[in-house]
Amino acid sequence: MSFIEQDKNVIAPLYGKADIEIVKGEGSYLFDSKGDKYLDFVAGIAVNALGHQNKSIKEAVVKQMDCFNHISNLYVNMPQVELGKKLLEITGFDKAFFCNSGTEANEGAIKFARKYFDRKGEANRQKIITFVNSFHGRTFAALSATGQPALRQGFGNMPGDFVHVAWNDCAALKSEVNKDTCAIMLESLAAEGGVMTLSAEMVETINSLQKEFGVLVIVDEVQAGCGRLGTFLGFEKYGLNPDLVTLAKGIGGGLPLGGVLLRQKIADELKAGDHGTTFGGNPIACAAGLAVVNQIDAALMKNVVERGAQIRTALADIKAKYSFIKEIRGEGLIVGLALDESMPVGNVVAAARAEKLMVLSAKGNVLRMLPCLNVSAAEVDEAMAKLAKAFEAVAK
Image 1 (cartoon, one colour):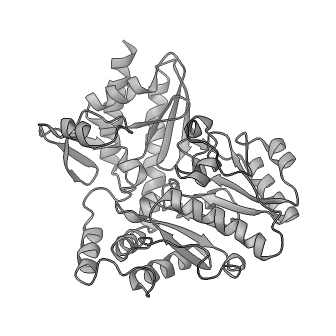
Image 2 (tube, one colour):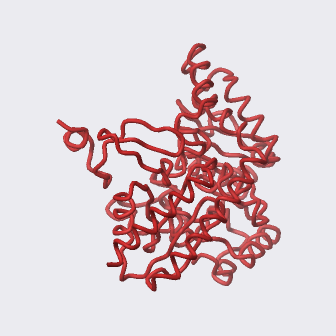
Image 3 (tube, one colour):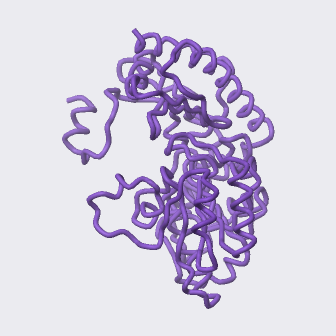
């Protein structure tokens, strides 16, 4: 029985899976059971930031496994401390909290923001403003923060006090923020929601509201952080000043790892027992995370910027040939192609896969590409040639 048949017999049917049996990965490539080689521009949905089988990550994991796999958060976990120290050094934040995933990181940030005001005697400050088409996770509070109503349907009542305004709609945001607002929560680049970038006016508006009303700013860096936009954290490109930042995906290099970075004023209002996790900050995952962060240097960021520009130049040539391609979107190595309704994005994803290129979609009929951060110029050329052939196939 094939892997695919076994999967259907065993695994809950919650994902639309490609008809491929992956058996190995190496660098920017994946190999299937038939021996076919695919150029991977999905990277585990921005998880494999340094590609498959990164040597330093593998060595760090094995070294930690020779010590212990897990001790819980009842004891000092030095891999967690070392990763925390490195992140705080790079980002200028004051404290770190580790968990297992992006949705858990966002749950934590939401709880920390509300607890902050509660401890300050402002329990009325509960409302959190997020954005239409945003994506913050699948657990209940993170799902309530997510600006996609269809994802909440059928799951009953959601946690309250979340308001969604249109992306880059400064007037709508201003109308919602007042002295009772807890936080503004946003992605530095809304990748799942359609590869949407922030306008300068929206950044200025958020900074102004933060200063005027003391509202907290939570920036979700789950997909755009850890170097993917060409800066360690995506918000650095735009000039936001967040009080809380959430991380996951790329930071673990393939292992389950998430985190929240906090300013000291928020950490000062937290006490033991306010929040917790059994597996969060697992020593093996943190050892891998430190190996990832240690490789996100100036040379890698230069590669992100250059390869992103290379992709967009090639996409401009493709776009010129097809009227159904509306817009090139993104920053760094989150790249999107918005298509009109005459060309379903799923058709392009399938055609690219037939050319042995893996890409994915985003909301709003957008083709999305998330190559590893150390992708080479030659690999980008190869990917764009494959994508050009895919567009030729679907346009016939």
